Image 1 (tube, rainbow, N blue to C red):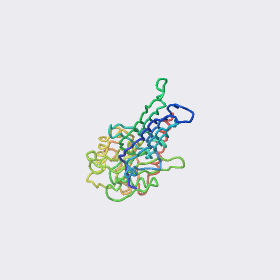
Image 2 (tube, helix red, strand yellow; image 1 turned 120 degrees about the horizontal axis):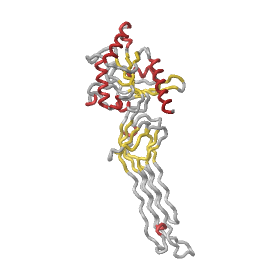
Image 3 (spheres, helix red, strand yellow; image 1 turned 180 degrees about the vertical axis):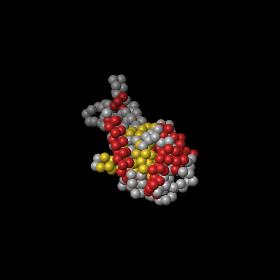
Image 4 (cartoon, one colour; image 1 turned 180 degrees about the horizontal axis):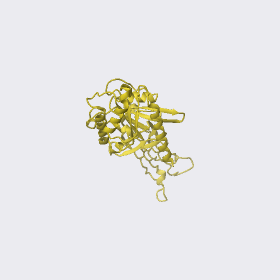
Length: 342
């Protein structure tokens, strides 16, 4: 299924039912008085988290969602039935924005979370409500209020513990294939990965984390080059970023260090908050370097980009160095979770 991370929909809550104008007509009860019942409230529209959905693709086909209208009131003081609420499933990580006001209504981040996006109309009142000592036969009723109508922008930001950051062909897709059961497309040309994907890395039973594979960016992405920065928003929810670097070749006429510096600059330009997020350096494709040159090449690279954080030397293709990296990530995430609960 094609990955879709943005959609526009229209939600319409149900109108409230009208109040009823009615008088009792019973044998042996003269001048029976008013008995018109109230209408029912209109149904509301809720967005509800569904962990089984991972894209917004369904919203390409159905764009309008209408809740049920409240039933009109009836005689014999019978109240109309309330309209049924409408529950629209969306994937975890969905941000909902009102297109008219540009207000962020909310975010769906927890399993089974419900978010009210359009409230049903209030019911109308029947003429019984207006009965008084001075008005024995009221002919007054009220109409139900209309339900809310909204045009919404849905934007999906993947929920992942770890995000992969790197240029096209840095080996991100090969890496995620090596550490998880995900099978992204791998090829020897740029932008093989066109849509974000998730992989679950299982260290052992009950110890796992989620990795997000994001399409590569290039210099000038902030100005729309390549795929631009469209998918970098998916890294905003991650706890840790892995900056993956291709140490083997120089496809773009530059050395890996200068390319890494430019990518970091693009990241800072896109989001200073994301730039300050914890990042680990993963030097990849070391299987293509002469064994005697690996340590020197890695040391020179780290020195050129003035890197002070953790550094891991791996080959995603041969899976060399992958296990220590995954175990280190797991320990880091568990440590953060432990600190958060204390």
